[in-house]
Structures are given as structure tokens and as C-alpha cells.
Length: 555
Image (cartoon, rainbow, N blue to C red; front, side, top):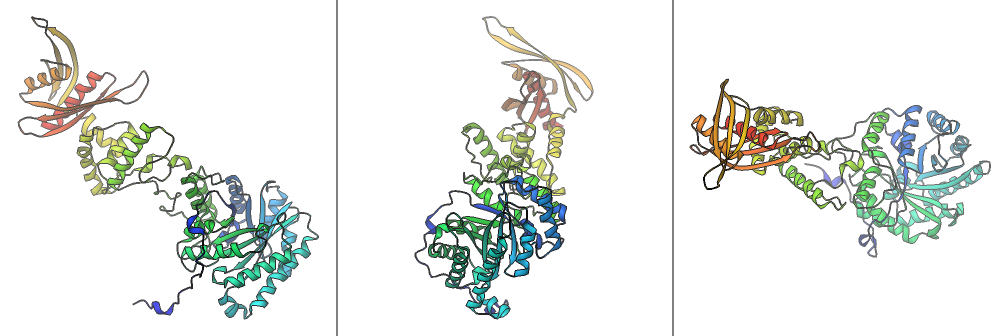
């Protein structure tokens, strides 16, 4: 049995005056990508300089205006990467790079050497403040830990005197979620006052869930408590940096935005230490799905995924929100049927509003396609097969035909697994369009016959082969289909009845073809089946459909 008693519950925040549950996200935050620092340090094979440049260029293309590019004082490759960005003039004027450093003088000095030549940079200092780390790592009390942060701020002020650009200070009380709130406020306020933050020269206070320790609502309470208790709040940009240890990082981020956070640090696709940082794409697409501009250029998730996989050498899970290969795919028969009906309703409404069951956003908005939405396996149903035939090939099968054809595909799926659209179409041809043996339609002449008294009837002179023997027969009826039916009955000695008839154009233009679906019953046995015919002539398409059904019924 799991020894759950060895763990103690993380205390909640006593904060009954919380306001965030009644709020809604209304706009995108300031986004800061930490792919090149936090994400990179968590890789089995960290990126080399050219891979870092490719990732940086992607982030710029996506519209990030703040990008943490590394810890240049801690690694030569990160120092060299930063200098490459400067010397190759790869940093756009509207992009601010961010560099991380501990509150140690030699590291801060090296950091300022690295950023020379950059017009504006965020210098991000941090030290761990949690109760646990104070006790077991640093063996320091509150005042000693606070002094580390104050000294770090003073050193930044010291070295920025010789820096030829503008510095924005960011301070993170690392392991904030394990820090007493009154102490977190005390240390952040000390840094704020030492820096001399003003509304025109704001400081970034970053409150990280360095380790996600409890439920997302507690993090939201912590953020709102800090937000409400800061001094000179208009001099602070309140930033968050959640991780995903409990698998609820996205929820924690969204609730923290409700609680007053202005800025979010995260990575593309959630790469990062342990279970990862929060996935900025996930949050941004969530906003997009609610009609909120995410303020990022996210129209091509396939390109984003390809670059990330190439640079990080990590595969994106096929079920990853929005980016996974299977997230816009339905295998379930009931899901497939609902999607099919939703797409049809969408086309009829034509109001510009996306509402389709099981598809929270239009896949094409982020560079995905409709084609993979429905995939057919043994769990699929009649609606999914019909959807594939319609969306891929333009055949709008009558509702009564859905199960008949789906049963054919079901048997194949049970033997081999997933059935590709091309194979579904091949089976449709073999079972319906190319069902020309032993009865093969050749030609038909349709004429009108007038009887005494002014009555009219339709005469069909039908030529076909039966078991390779050509025959010509005549039938009289109240229309072309009825006349052909009677000619076949007389020639073959059978009795058949047309139960249903449907037709539609397959494609527009001068070369348009029509598809005709004939539901035919053998009166003697009561068996019924569909036949399908296509032709540029609707009458010929109908006759081919009758022959297709006759071959399916009797041979």
C-alpha cells in the first residue's frame, strides 16, 4: 500500500476576501519566452549556438517581445550565443532580451559584459526564499536571505553605470510557492525600494511556482494576496513563472491571471525541468478559442512544432493540446457523426462563428487541416465513414446508405486497424462504382410514347451485357428510372422495387459529374441494397446506379 502518511499537506492561504473567482480573462498578458534558458537547461542535449539562433528567430517570428536568452555568466556557449545575436544584429528593435544571473558579483559583472551593445535588456536576478531551502540548503534566516537579494540589486545598479543601454530589473524569489507570504512580500518590497522603482521605471517582480506544490486555486490566492499588498503597485509588473509538477500548470497560470498577474514566463510546448514549464501556446490558444487576441502569431502550429522538435530533439506527444497530431482527430463513431453534422450546420449558418461539436477551434486557423479530423478504425461508426466520403471525395451518401457502407469498412478495420481515406475510396469503387459484373450497362435510348387519348409514357431501349453476352431490351414506364427498371425485370425474370433515389453534383464547372444513389429491393426475398452511378449525364448516372444495385443484390 502506498505510504501516503509520509507526506504532509501544503497549507492553503487564509484569504476569504479573494476576488479572482468572479473575474474573467479579457486580454493577453505580456509574454516572455524562456525556451532558450529554462527550456534549454532541461534538455538531454542542450542546443548549440546555431540551434539557439533558429529557436530565437522562431520566437521573434511568433511575436514575442521579451525573450530570456540564457545565463551567459554560467556557460560559455550561452555567452557566445548572446554575442552572436549582438554582432549579427539579430535582435529586432522592438524585442527586449532577458538574461538570468544569481546575486553574485562575479556573475553579475560577467552578465553585463555579455549584454554590451544591446539597447535595452532585462537583467533577471534571483535567490531561493522558501522555508525548506533556507533551512536545508542555505542554513540562513530571513534577514540573511533578504540581504542576498538587496546586495544583488545593488550590484546591478553598480555595473549598469558603465552599461550603454537601458536596464529593466527583474527579481524572482525562487521557490515562491514554498515561501511564507509575509516574507515573500518583505523581500520583494526590499528589492523594489532598493531599485527605486517608479511608474516610469517599473520593476518586474516574478513570482514563480518553481515547484508546483498544491492546487491551482492556492497559487491564485498567493498571487492575489501579493498583488493587493504590494506598495506602489503601479511601479510593478507582476510576473508569474509556473511549472507543471502536478499537471495543473495551465490552470494555475489562468487563475493567476485572474488574480492580477500582468506577465507570463513559459516555453513553447511546455519544455522545461521535470514535468516542464507552462506551455505558452496552450494558454494563448485557450484565449484564442474564447475570442481573445493572444497577441502572438500562432497561425502555423505545424511549423512551430517542427522547429521545436528539431532544436530540442524531443518529440511532441500526439495528444498534446492543439499541437499534437491527433488532437483534431476523432475515432469514435458518435464523435465523427457529431462533427459531420456540425460541419454541415456550420456551412448552412454561414455566420462566421465557429461552433462544431468536439472541435473547440477551427483547425485551419492554426495551420491544421480538416482531412485528418476523422480517422477510421474499428471504433468508428457510420457517421465517420460518411464524413470521409463527403469531405475527401464529395460523395454525400444518403443517410440510409451510411450503415451499409460503414459495415464494409468496419470488417476491414477489425482485421488491419486504421483504414486510410484512400482505402475507403477504393472499397467504395469496388463495391459500388465498379460493380459491373455480370450485368454491365452499355447504353440507353429514352423516348416518349403517346397513347390514344393523349397519355404519355417513357420508353427505355436498354443495351447491356449479361455474362459477356450483349442484349437489348425495352421497357415502358412513367419515367426513365421506372422504364429501365421494367426492362431489367423483364430481361432477367426478377421483380425489383426502387425504395429511394438521391442525386447531387460532384463538382462544379462545365465538366461536372453527377452522383446517383439507388436504393433497390428484391421483392421476392425482401433484401435491399444501394447502388451508385456517376456520369456527366444524370439519367446515365441513375441507370448505372440501378445496375450497380442489381449486381449487388443478385450476384
